[in-house]
Image (cartoon, rainbow, N blue to C red; front, top):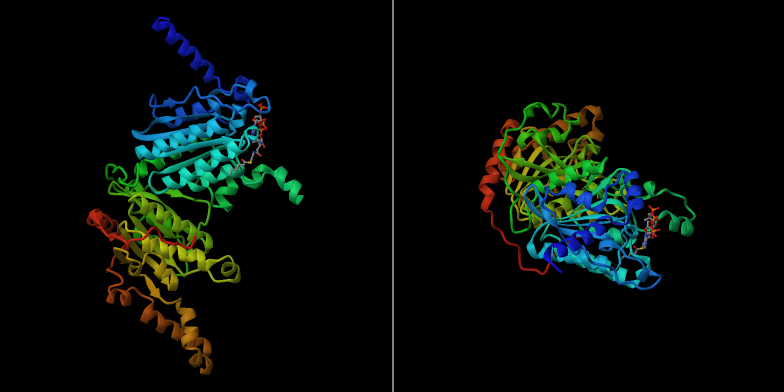
Length: 514
Ligand code: HXC
């Protein structure tokens, strides 16, 4: 056969496969505000950059009349491309083909692209839209998931792994996203759960909709499983591109620097923190007053809001921010905020991203609920993550740094490289009121005017300890600085620590308080 005819045959074969599960299934997909798998890849990747592999793979199942069915590309598209020039490996499940269900060949395609991503040390993006294990393929489907989870774990901390939930992600399938670094969800489209509403109804007799069980809001606000929430698929893809711009391709590289830019000075850093130390303020204003263009790419914005995490740039370099949020529960550390901070610190550490910590917290949250929910175990994760991290660590104490909170939030004692304190910083074992009530209890009780004595003792304690100078006198704080000096000192600290080199004692791995 002459070459042009062979090319024509190739084109015809391709054309047939590009129809996926057929017009009807595609229309159903569109009616739900969803794109097809290939459309999604095309929107996400740079134009013309996608190179598809294994387009002609077919399933090999024979039971339940499967031998009579052709499933184009076996319901998953894989390949490589670029996002604003960064190389990316990608898979996208095609719900129009057998509900994107995962059989043996489907899983082999996914594991092939995962192996490729790890070997080439490039980020992996997985678009999940699937009814889960392909029921007709039995244990082969389960084997496929196991192979995926194993690779997710091997790749963890080596290449960035991003999961995008653009449809159902049911049953054991949820554990692949859960093992990856960042999970994106979209309003009304994403559904993630271990056991669906029907099983819950049968086993527990409870009725619940898929949305209320594991919709995008649930995972953004309640469980913390999702890191980014979008209202539409397009918004979601824009956010993924932004994320990719902040992170390096692998753990041997640094994030690509951008052109340095000044913050947009719409807020005066001197005026953010109120004079009255009992009043809250938005710590994101502090972050934006030091970042290039005042940009801050927040992660897990809707969950555990008492701590703020995310990426920004300082003089062109990507940095990770961890900041107590006085607007929410006075910025305390609790079970969820500890998990949120600790995981992000480990992410930054794995991918060579300096960590900037802004401190303003009254400590760990007291109470029976927190104690019984394991605040000891979860809170310890923050200590572990900061202590273990060897990337540059820069800490700025804005206001309160009390008790365990002082130690946990990137203190000198956990090997912060630079510790700065603003003049209003209060570094003490506990808040002045609590402290005075305990250590001056006898004097207060014996006094003719206990209230006046208490007030006087609180003031005495404040003057003595609730300031940055005691810590500065011991060298626990390197410099007491004016708020307006913060950005300049952060730029300097990041430049100075560009070649930081420390090593941990030899170990196979530590035993963090998971
Ligand atoms: C085979 C499946 C499938 C599956 C969907 N399909 N899920 N085929 N195995 N798991 C097929 C349907 O038969 C249908 O085929 C097509 O995909 C579209 O599905 P619909 O049901 O018509 O779509 P919709 O109404 O949108 O409902 C989507 C859904 C539902 C909610 C995902 O399909 C569903 O509940 N599926 C089963 C989910 C599930 O229980 N999966 C197994 C979980 S256990 P036709 O030919 O009619 O178009 C699991 C274990 C993994 O995953 C453990 C790993 C550790």
